[in-house]
Image 1 (cartoon, rainbow, N blue to C red):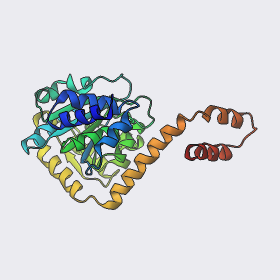
Image 2: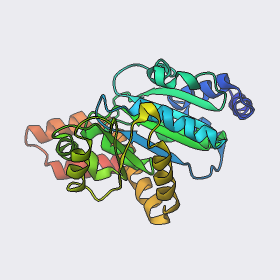
Image 3: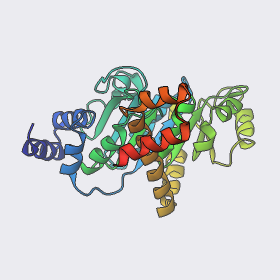
Image 4: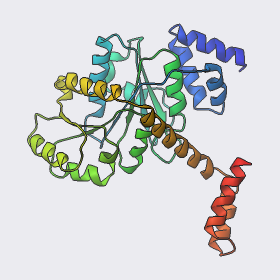
Length: 293
């Protein structure tokens, strides 16, 4: 595929071709990623809302309700669902979920599933590139949903602002979320299914664990979505150069760690440390020096 063809794909995607957009997203998951990024040129900062939380918390329902609310505002929305295990599935992870069904045929809503492909932190290495591409294609907002399996989800804070952690009412949920590290990265905490018993107690427990705003939501009924939208907007308005730089630093470090894990000398150096012929400090220094030479 020539550079001209990539340019043509970008032009077609910019004119609303879902097929061209899909092909470009496939390319940024491939070794051709840099070619696509180079063809994009300068891109305005992206707006990314991260949605995470434990399985069963109602993340997809919340995402569906948020997409509906943003579409009412006339915004073009892309949803990236990060799947930790399945192969690339072109949107099946979210696309087959009933809560997103209303948006499947909306040309201004893109729904895409992205496999992590072994990347450590729960976010696919291609996610930052996909976000950059979608922003260049005039999507106003990218919603990033992760499966919320614990520590691995913390990396979402490197690309999203704000990061919204969704929990259910229930004894110990707040404590479990704190132990998993989710509350450390939460800019906004949502107690979904707040019509169930225990919601108020869960909110009280959370207030002891985090200083982040805590909202109650019944996503399946659309209750509380407007307040969540307002809280997301307020957080976005308070963004700063310092916060953007901190997120970028986290992205760079995360992707650098992935590159180092793929270093051809890693196994050899590890074996030398294991048999005592090399110390781990010198091995780490050599690993970094080899990458920067």
